Length: 335
Ligand code: HEC
Ligand code: HEC
Image 1 (cartoon, rainbow, N blue to C red):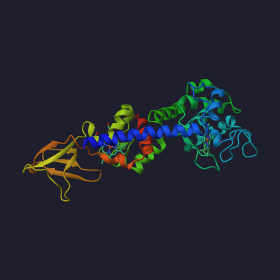
Image 2: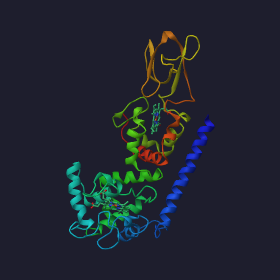
Image 3: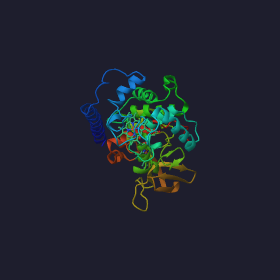
Image 4: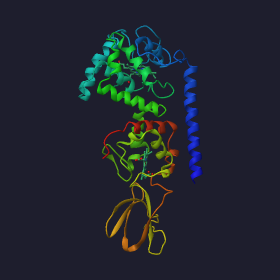
């Protein structure tokens, strides 16, 4: 059984590597040249190379009459629709974000948000179709994104490298998001959150920031563990157990495993225990209470976690990367 899991793991790593490689190759083929060398300067010039090269911004955005893309907002001053270039427009957008969130936004916070979490504010008249530029195939690094921000500042706004290097609380959270996504191979944490709560219903067994059910451990601070333990927990749940969430099987007086009325083996997480009985959580929806007078013992099963082993088969490689990126960001207090 373990060798099957091992094979699945290796296969996944291979698929992931191929995926990243193809993403890269496609970007290169379609003109993501220029910045192939070392790290880019955090300056408008550095950002300009990214904008018109690896970042592929030019495939959707023009700046004034530079560029030929028309389907997405022009980032320069252009006609009646765009009276202000993005450096100045960002000041207005920041006010709008302030009103919507109750947080103090600067123009640079807005520019950072528009790259880190574009769906938070969607420009009127456009669809929520801005690329996640730190995910494959574009995969900009945090440094490259900072360079792009200074280039956007330079479009009619104040260039302030210092505020980019010493970010506000708001911008720092966006930086964390981008860094976590890069560490997870470029996942998109926004989609990861959706997959966690809706798509794969991880929240059927896990609480996170007060939402979800508590059969498995709370994951509000899981990001502190780092990428390797998290990915192992998903790919091979039984390889190691979170203390307190081991699997126990109930053995009856006759020395045999006990089954519930629906024929399910009574095996799972020990939810509670008192002098008379134990309560076992078999899966997300099913619990069983067994009287101690009817059982001989509880035996720990080290080969099987309540967390399903086949979750990975229900995920695309992208889902997996996105979930990892989302979980890496969870560094709050565990509840
Ligand atoms: C696949 C097309 C696409 C790519 C690639 C893309 N964007 Fe966008 N971008 C959009 C769309 C669509 C919007 C408008 C919807 C929204 O606000 O999310 C947008 C909005 C923006 C905004 C907000 C504009 C405003 O008026 O407030 C900024 C800034 C921006 N993009 C910068 C960039 C930069 C920099 C890059 C490259 C690193 C980039 N975009 C790559 C499609 C794209
Ligand atoms: C049927 C219940 C169940 C479901 C569904 C489930 N888990 Fe779990 N999960 C558990 C249990 C129980 C544990 C603790 C035992 C273990 O470590 O295997 C656990 C452990 C974990 C851990 C390790 C926690 C730690 O503290 O180290 C992570 C990470 C995790 N799960 C993520 C996920 C994700 C992501 C999904 C959805 C794709 C998911 N789980 C779905 C029950 C579940």
